[in-house]
Picture 1 (cartoon, rainbow, N blue to C red):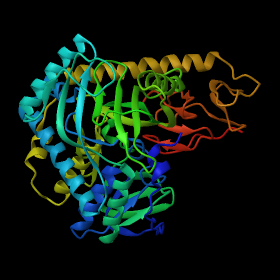
Picture 2 (picture 1 turned 180 degrees about the vertical axis):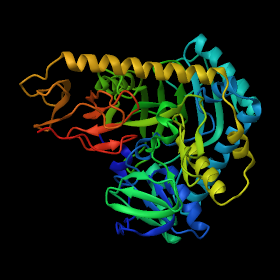
Picture 3 (picture 1 turned 90 degrees about the vertical axis):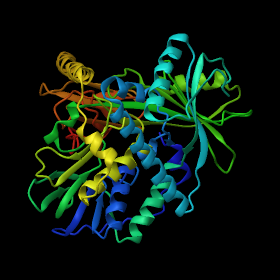
Length: 497
């Protein structure tokens, strides 16, 4: 599945691709998404020599598959944070997102990249959900978002029980934003090297960065890889990997102009997508923990059916999915990596609101590295999670442990069939040597790979929407032939035939 972003705007900036064994730079950034490239730009502007290493291509993971809403109204996020922290922390979170939003939109304006100003809406279809929204409105007030207002009316073609509306937010084309960042990065002498995966790093000074193409050194390393690829901080145990889906449609009649997000499950996210052939409607949602949905293709089919029902005549054009990471305490993790010697930094856990949080994280990281002072970052850095965060962490890891045991038992009990799976299908079972094997057929080619994730040994599950092998423990994903798509794993699945 290809996102509408890649279909309509292939990145135009040419990477350097001149990896030099043993080269030294001030900062290596692992990951060429929004976090990594914004951090790289900020550091390069300060005069640092910066190299961005991207395992695949710029924007290949979350940034190129986001719904790209640049909004301070974020579903139920603010009320969730308020239940765990003080109002000072809540206000610091909103201020961080406000600065991230302003910085990104200012860059786009300077670079002549269009964006659309839109009202953001969070809506409820039922009375219980409307009561939850009242709590979000209270949190908005406590956070200083006084522009947020309650309304019983909307542009949606169905009745609602109530909604919050925040004017003056924005939506963007994320790859156009990445192009602007790449151009700015190049202007300041930045180096982008694609198809080069960081696999390890020392905690010494300088940091020795090990990649799939050799080694280089740097004064520091920034991990902007979704889940941090180094396990020293055990962030994989503090994050829940979420997979969600998006579709676009040509609609014959009028479509809502606001950016909408539902409170009632299953989630529905709506926005417009400008294009040469006129505006399209984007509909997303149906999120689930990575690897823990039995029929991912049904998630797409459900979005298509919902849209065709509410927008008669809608013509389906694109479908894709994205991966996001929710921290157990609902706030991003930004700062030095534990046991990284003070030279390795991480940013992760944006809870599906990466357009503002990613830039805020980059502003925070660059301030720490350049020894600046950012009051909201200081407040977020001092926060302490309460009982709710601890309970969420225990629950999430208990689910991982139980799931791992169950999956290993099932894989050992069921032998891999002799016949190849049907087109687009995959299965895991006991191989000839008694180990779990993963077998799939894609585009007529049958591949047999190890059925065990190369991160921490989870039994993989087949994603029939993306035709990939997904790990239900910590969200690593692999192509049908075993090629690593995203971490925290850093190596491919062994091929068995």
